Image (cartoon, rainbow, N blue to C red; front, top):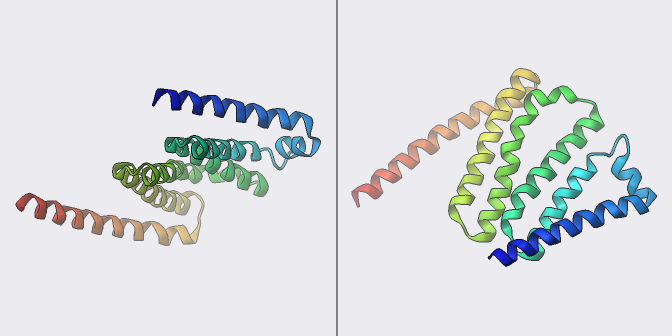
Length: 171
């Protein structure tokens, strides 16, 4: 296991180094990476490098930082393109969802049910928080309709899981 971790880390360092070296030698790539409108592409690319490392070295846990980096990069790209930097007042709630997506992928690929379930909960809580904060701070109408539905679903999930636990305890 330790050998695979070391190889994965080495591959990651090499891939990041190659990426930044390519930026220095190719003007088009340099403009894409450091351009006024496209600088978040670097963050997305780092996320993709982590994902590629995860696939090539079969280290599914690398999907967690990959999804966080790619998600943050995508969010920053959108904010930079639209100029809507005030959306940080509610967009930060997507970060648990990014990590949840990585946990979900890790759980599926590593066949770890607990990671898969944790990822689902992170995604679900992220959506609810996004709905609450976006409706309050962003005045987004769709978000005002989203988070109450999420709370209703959460209530049903709590009831069903309580019934299932009670059944298992009696068996």
